[in-house]
Image (cartoon, rainbow, N blue to C red; front, side, top):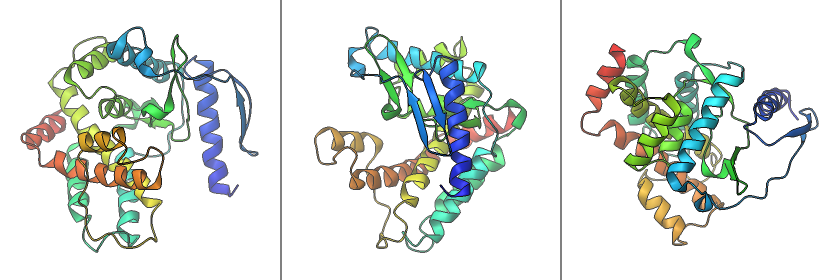
Length: 277
């Protein structure tokens, strides 16, 4: 692999090894980032709907895994998350995938968030940074987190924010997730910060996914599914899971969800709460 890719592989493999040692990832028996080879226990995945605790049990167990990652591992620090997203957004803006200026609302919104969001490197914790359903395995007894390529030190709420965009989107599941992770009901500040992190996660996913389509035909607009509409389209077969078309639709949905979140009633107050700390 190229030097940059090798650097990323070393980081990802090191995080995976720490996660395995902490009992969060499947047991790891061999890892050689230079060769790109890792050997770990095979987990025969079962549907999450078979979890004996139901949806609430799933999110509570995931909260426990996130907490174990944060407290029992020491991942590297590779930069500030908002700054990394700004760089990815700038790159996507230059890619030619969308007309000039189409992503300016996203840049302006991100600038608002960066101006209001306190960011202290001393408070960052080990984070998976991509605990989406495809990276969660259920073996019939317990959950495992896999695929640690994006792991590094990040804000403590990033992994929880990602979980609330899909598996814990319903209010009662979000409450169960947060209380299990925090050990208490979240206060006004934590709720506000989580809302901001959720938007940063949306924008990050949109940039990461759509950067892979750079160089294709220019998309004339940013019309997209809502998150609910996207999941419905996958469920009824209009979008095929794992296809490039679905990935592209997910990327555009993520960008649209970011802008919609900025325009949501009360978001100015959310930023004010976050800024005050």
